[in-house]
Image (cartoon, rainbow, N blue to C red; front, top):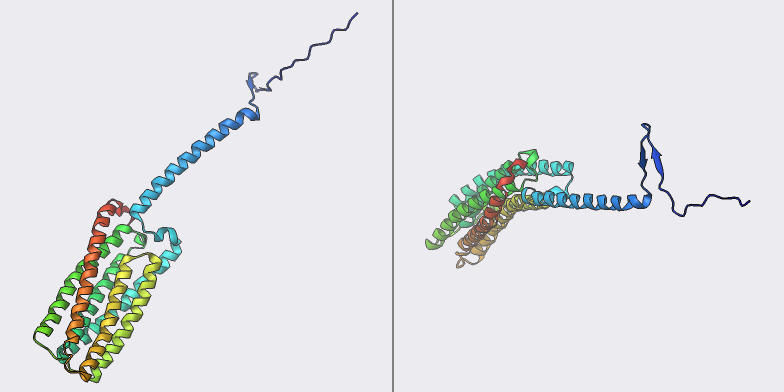
Length: 283
């Protein structure tokens, strides 16, 4: 007799999993599960990419670049420093403005009047920066930033017109500046204080990516230059009386610089305010 042996199956049967209710369910092999996993991963990746693009577009419209550069506690620390510097700037420049107005009246100096007006402008610009950073949650708000810059631009233009008017009048009527030690002292102190404030404001503005702070620093820098210009024009007039027009000429030059900066602020910032007006919720 020939023993009959069961024929071995050449096909490998799929593993079967028996559930508690007696029903059988076919278990998928690792080779079958891999394509599905890859497909799901790709789908999740595409979804995340789309969400990131949407988030980035919203951030570009409503938040400044500082939101990506600074951690929350760093941003708040720089915001508090900006507030302190603004208050210090308001106190110092207010005193300088009063003193410079007095000097300009007593000494008939167009440069002193220009500096006094620029110091008054510095008080206003620092007050605008205070408003800009008064809300802790709006430290990265692009809309608030651009709106502050527009206000600064308008103030710059109005102030420049007053400075130009005074300087042109001094040139037309040939007003001669009077030189003394008091004028020198005011020029040196004003120039040094304003330049120090300008440097600090520039540093903070760079950290916070704030055009408003940088503009405030620019105004302080102009004040420092005008403070030293009083000293220079007075010394030149003392040595060369025929160069009486230097004082008024410097006043005209400073007025034109402030006017150009104010116009540029408006041209740059008005379209941006319109673009970010829908993102006021960040404030």
